[in-house]
Length: 168
Image 1 (cartoon, rainbow, N blue to C red):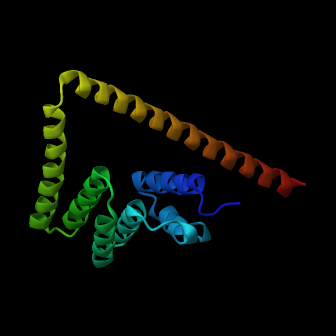
Image 2 (cartoon, rainbow, N blue to C red):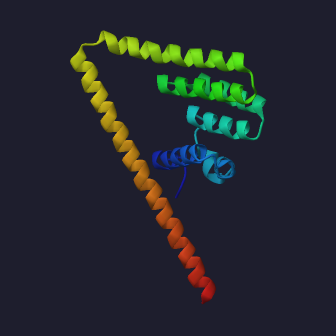
Image 3 (cartoon, rainbow, N blue to C red):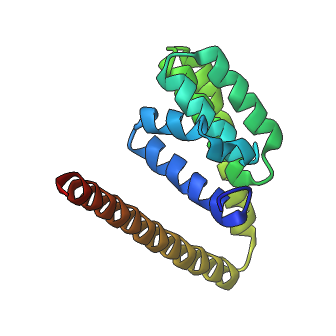
């Protein structure tokens, strides 16, 4: 049973990321308004997905409201960076280039602070962290690839079953 479980939340997060990456806003809209998301926690990722959807429809006020919510819920530097990046995209879409530039400045300031902290560490520690994060990134990419292949396989099986049932 799907519900508010870690695996369900991971699946919804993965699907929203895929739909945003592929600019499939119809599917994103369906997912975010489905009963599966009724129990989905309203975290930074959820509000960023909503902001992407609103921005795609030209609802910039709603997109900015969602980004404010995302910013207030940001619990990691990555959340904050994602929020500022999406703020940049929203302001750029509105041709508010000054605000877009300010969002980029904030994003780069945060990234620079991360780099400064890393530069203060001994080289061995920085290398270990780099390779650890690289391995984690590769693992996540592999996992996402497997999940995407599984989704495609399931869709293919369902399509074949529909065709077979329709013939019988």
